[in-house]
Image 1 (cartoon, rainbow, N blue to C red):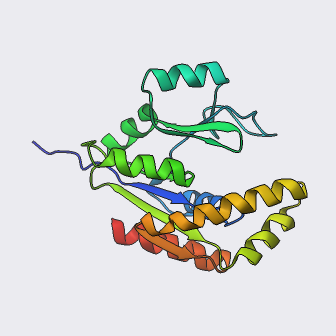
Image 2 (tube, helix red, strand yellow):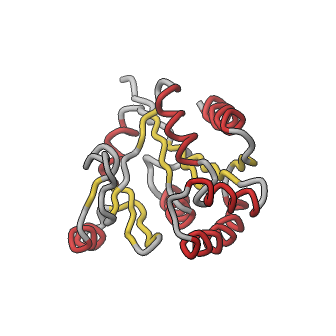
Length: 195
């Protein structure tokens, strides 16, 4: 009997302002055969965000109940909110051969790497990619250029970014961020070499 080949899970991380969300969104639009793994959060939806499409939006009690029930592959406190990846979201798609793209922080990526060692569906199927800003100064300029955060929030994000950048050595691949085009081409090349 023919056994369905399970899909790959590409995990992309990088500090706020590294461009990871932009490059991931482009990948999902332009590269056939890969889908977004929808993650969960306790943060309030932003304008235009849709529950179950952009995130699974949960209140803190519901999220905690899911943690207690073992429903997450990984979860973390990030910027005073909870974020996590539901097992059900990943398992159903990988099992039928769908490749997934997951944009998560370094804490979540570390948990996924550890889990993958003993999970038959994930073992040998998780590929981790870190998007590294060219310099701390460039990262600060990108955060200020977004004009979405107050200066104290930018300083807090920069402190977190420096810590996150130390984790890049644990990833399978590191993309040194250049232009959006270069970052996108590098991510596509990693995906194609995986398949």
